[in-house]
Length: 168
Image (cartoon, rainbow, N blue to C red; front, side, top):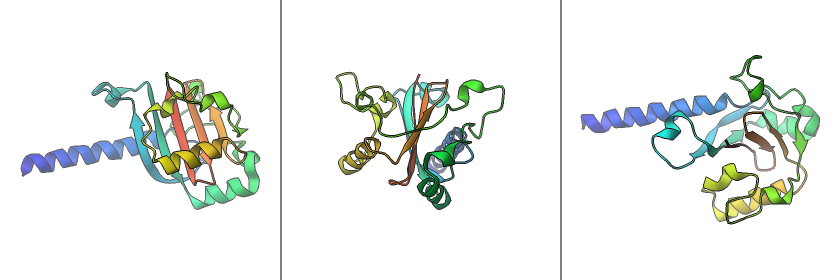
């Protein structure tokens, strides 16, 4: 009984740390309710320290969705610095935002994975959600950016999510 309680405490603390850790990668101007899903490359225990591929799915808050719907791309002009970065960490700062659609090769299925957007290779999306997700990146209305660290961040107001992917 005590071992189960300790394990539950450890797992809970780890999940809380992951929530905090991945909120640090978002610019302050992108408000989220919580982290919905975190998936990293398979391979324990290395991903506890660092991972070379994965994604985080965030639920956007209502104020961010309203700002994106009314201001579009211009509302993201200042959203370039992650919460956890300072001026000395230029590699973590994002480049100016771009509007979708993404180039088709980024989401194309290939024997090696999902094209350039390889951080999604480990996704566990339902078939319905994946269909809506891929449809959303192929039409205007979502916005994306990169940083010098190999991360891609996309906000998708129609789906009420932001997604951060990486492939280092």
